[in-house]
Length: 104
Image 1 (cartoon, rainbow, N blue to C red):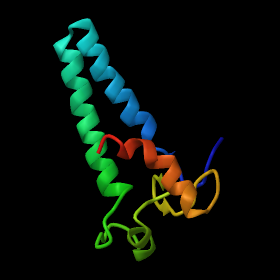
Image 2: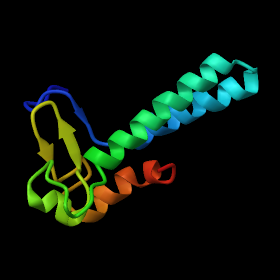
Image 3: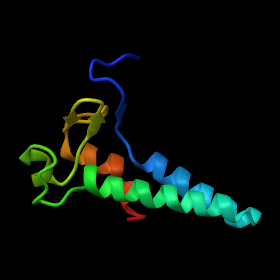
Image 4: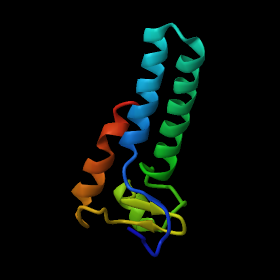
């Protein structure tokens, strides 16, 4: 499907879980390079999530409504939306990204 806002990312949990799994696979296989790459990618993703998705009330990255409610629904190539593909309810934005905050 083609969207007018360009590429987008709605959920952060997929990337967080993929990088965590990569790190665990490295541990299981005794592959320290895979483990360390997974840990690096996981740390980078979590830091980005905390800055661009789960923001503090004083954040000035987006318009005040995002900081006021503490989250973004969808990040596009050229904008941020308060809604998700599941709807505009605040609970949709929180539920969609909740899994990734377990690791933060």
